[in-house]
Length: 251
View 1 (cartoon, rainbow, N blue to C red):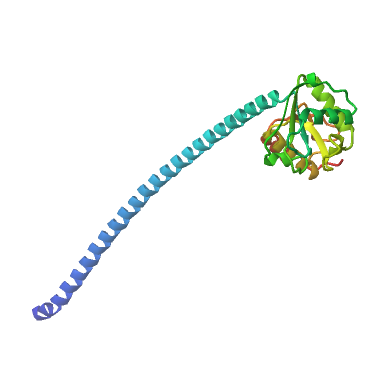
View 2 (cartoon, rainbow, N blue to C red):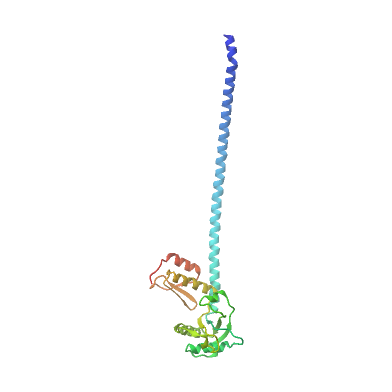
């Protein structure tokens, strides 16, 4: 019996050793997996906290950007209002060909007569040719710089505008017979910002998103419906809000 035991003992010891080794490895592996999972949970928590912080900072920056954009819009509007106020007695004449040593007062006098209006030089505070800009093409494409007239009173300026809107066309030969033939346009002297705003409003009108847009005393007005009340538009932001809620209208 002893010999049998001695013969089997090595195999038994080997089996026990392997079993013990497997148990040790299993417990070690389980501990490692548990440690890795705990680390993963900790990392996930850190990532969630960082993500929450980044979302908070993003919203904070977004809110601040909206406040800055609002202040910038108000500042631009304030500057544009000041510029518009200083042009309240001004008139812009487009389409009169430029000549050397031209007599602008004489040209204005002849335009006045073509409109059927009396003219006194004392009504004019100043008159000059302006430097050409891209906004000058708002009304009509012209080849020459426009003429700016500053009247002594807005009342006189408005008489010119009213009569010009009643008359269909004025030609340059009404100013001077020797000038090349071209159409003349008389408008309020608008700021570049206001011209851009009117251009955008007219585009909405062409797209049938608003029924009517018009200008009065340097201010832009629109109607949301053909019989609706007049709405003063001060900025492109106002137009965007209006067009975003207004569907196509029937004229």
